[in-house]
Length: 268
Figure 1 (cartoon, rainbow, N blue to C red):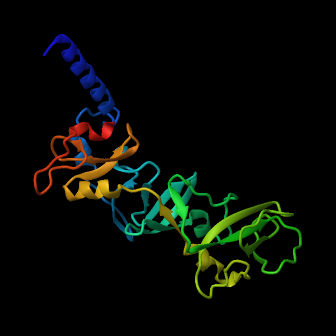
Figure 2 (cartoon, rainbow, N blue to C red; figure 1 turned 30 degrees about the vertical axis):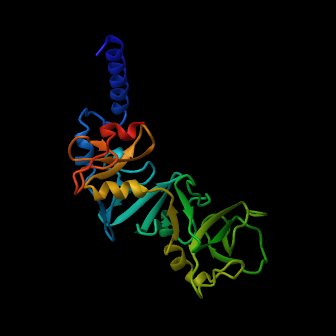
Figure 3 (cartoon, rainbow, N blue to C red; figure 1 turned 180 degrees about the vertical axis):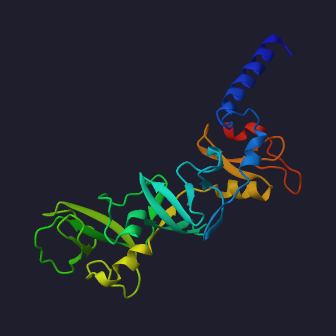
C-alpha cells in the first residue's frame, strides 16, 4: 500500500469515526449499547408493548423517533407532548399507525382551560378522517345562533360551543377541539350540539395518524433479530445489532447474511 493510498484510507476512517460519534449514547463510546438499551417496550396502564417509532421518556434518545415520546403517570396514564400541549393517550394502534388522544385540559373540565387551538406537528402527524371539530367561544355577548349552546361559566361570562371550525367573531376567544364522529351524537358538521353528552364526547378523544415508521427497513431489521432506532447523523431509522457490525442495514438473519456495507451503513 503506497503512502497516498494509506493517507486516503486513514482520512476515510477518521471521517467515519467522527460521524459514528454523533450517534453514540451520551457518555458512551460503545455502539454495542445501542442494541442493549433499546430493548424495552413501553407499557403503562392499558397502553402496552409499544415499540419504535415510540420510546419512553426515560429511554435513550436514539431508541425512538424525535417527538414520539411517551410518558407514564401514576403507572396508568400515558401522555404525549405535541406543540407544547399535553395529550392523554387512549389507544395506540400500530397496524394502522393511528392513535387516539384527548387534551388533558378537557379531562379536567368540560370547557378547555388552555385558550389555544388544538394544533398538530404536521411533520409528525395528520388528523384522521374519523374526526369532526367543535368550536368553543369565550367571552361572548348575547348570541342567537342556531346550534349554539351555553355549556359552562368559567370567568369568561359564559362559554358557548357549536359544531365546525369558527373564529372568535364578536367573542374574546375561540378554541377548536376535534372529536370523533359517532352516529347519533349530534356533533356532525353544521349540526346542533347536545351539551348534555359533551363531557363524554370530548373525553373519547380524537384520532391522529403518525407519518413515519421504520418502513420495510425496520421490518427487515426486526426479522434479522435487530432493534430499530434513530440515527441522528442521518435523520433516519437505523438497525442496531447485538454484535458487529452494531449499526447495519440488517443483522445476522437465519441465513447468516449481513449488510455488505457494515456498521456504518446508516451513517451516509
